Length: 92
Image 1 (cartoon, rainbow, N blue to C red):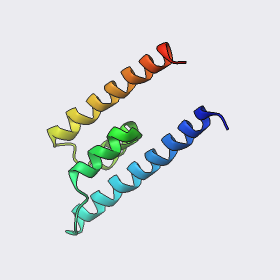
Image 2: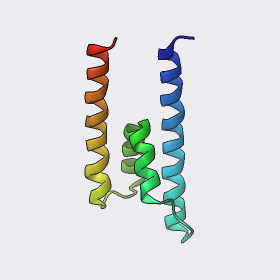
Image 3: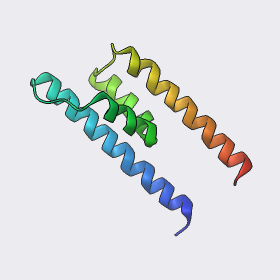
Image 4: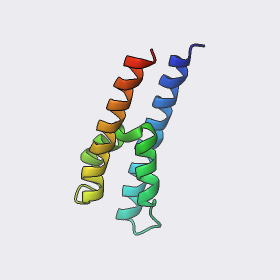
């Protein structure tokens, strides 16, 4: 398999995990259960789940009042886009 296919599969998996963990954290918040650490959510975002996590947070109205998430995740998205452009321009 080509490396691009592995990358696409990785992105699909990390985005699905990000969606599931975000929904789970919202469920825990509503039901007063142990929550997912904010660091874990931001780490999933950093490793490629940023777009799906941001969209999921908007849909389920979770962490939308937290500045750390409403500025941090879009910042991660921009950073990931810039890295993608640089890699595509100079490596591929």
